[in-house]
Length: 439
Length: 130
Image (cartoon, rainbow over all chains, first blue to last red; front, side, top):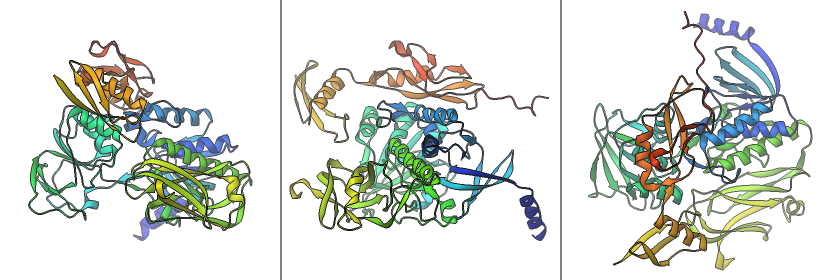
């Protein structure tokens, strides 16, 4: 043990040392958007550290259309959306390091990264933007009883196998969870020649958007069964089937409703978890609901000069909002580097009632004369129709937005005017959701 | 004979359930659409439903073994499965650029298949050369 420790210390002495204005951890859509915005705001010493062999992140395996409708106002596939931003950062001469794993980010912004060519590099960064994205919830996180056969994949793993590696995970599949990735994978599996027996959803409603229900399931007569879940997995070497049960209002399986489906493959599409191990090590505080850092409106965390954006902050439903948010982070980090940000004496706290699951940001702590409005991102707890999302302070309503249908799966955005913030009754903003007739 | 056809509108997240009454392929009446866009969608979706098909084709000598592609225009919904089968035999050579036509006139629809990303050729491994 002592010997190997000394060997490591020896390596550290010979370690490459660098200094940069901005280090972006992750080269997916969030990291790319942040780097582009920071450059455009006047910072040119930017490094992106990416562990994959190429930029673009998860978009590269999302070969279906549906991206870019907000940002580009045209419908693109994931790789097309990614390529726009990859070209943008390349044109700007951003320093891109691929196949590079970040080992640690310290609270005083020393970044340790490793790759084949340079070994371990220690980077002293003025600003760090965390853009590591999220990972998929697995079977272990769900606690489904049964044996441990082959044939159980997260939907995203299956997506990568099919779209990037050309491998079909199985021939007869059951998909657990009806979020968009699950729905998209039902279509891919079917078109690539597998049978999709059913998509099971424990909630009374789908977690995906209507268009995907129509174009991924109804187009191919794939059944969506709500309020049902897998209660047992059968098979020893390979999955041979599952037991499915209906669930009650508390998601408890109802005895007597069991039935079996024969299948060799199970795809899990049961949620995404922001990937925050590096953030926690750096001393960043996480939000209980989002699982991502608690940030102010510039996307700065509780650790000074460390920012976060994209799915590492909260899981987004549409990549266009990831881009918008990462550009806020990139622009803010750049302006702070240039001493163009003024800190409020007292931050404005943002609070919400029980009808909202969460709101990002948590507070507004800077004044920026060039900023006309601040977008507040939020999600409702359960589907609601004909509602206003309202913003008030000290009992006075400041803004509201009407939602014909608000769903947990679709983020609601409410923009606050900078002028409004100048004269608040108290340094507190409250968000609520009210029925139209009550408003 | 009059029939009822149900169509879920996908023009916006509301997802109106629209009921069409049809006879011999003619739409007699429509109910449930919340707006004119929905009526247009239902008419189009009944008469000639089309979709953009995203899939992948094999690549020789690329950094990845497959490249993502899509139909340059939407194709009839009924042709989706046949199109995937036809494309299963296609192999293209790297390098590929976004927008390159990798296959022409899929299933006789007159629609081309285009690449949706750049895919560089794999650099030969210097260690494996000797």
